[in-house]
Amino acid sequence: MMKIKDMNDLQRKVLEACHNGWFMSGEYTAMFDNHRRVFMADSQPLLYREIERWYLGHAAHHADSHLLVKCTKVA
Image 1 (tube, rainbow, N blue to C red):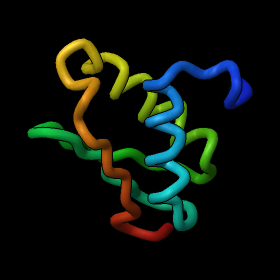
Image 2 (cartoon, rainbow, N blue to C red):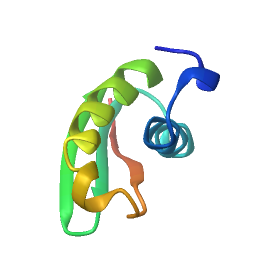
Image 3 (cartoon, helix red, strand yellow):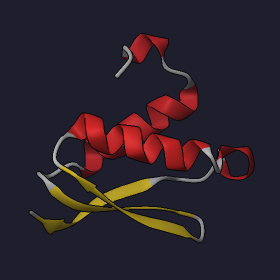
């Protein structure tokens, strides 16, 4: 994962959402607007990478949307 100072605003937004939603290894749900996706992660960096790919693919239309990441099932 890159350094925080080298991240753009959207990457920081994803990092903050992952950090705030991190509990422990397991199943995580990421949501914004009418989009929802489930991710499996055993570390914060893995969770961040997966959600970043997904969220940045939608950023052109939803960059101002609030991103919520929460643990939905502990492994």
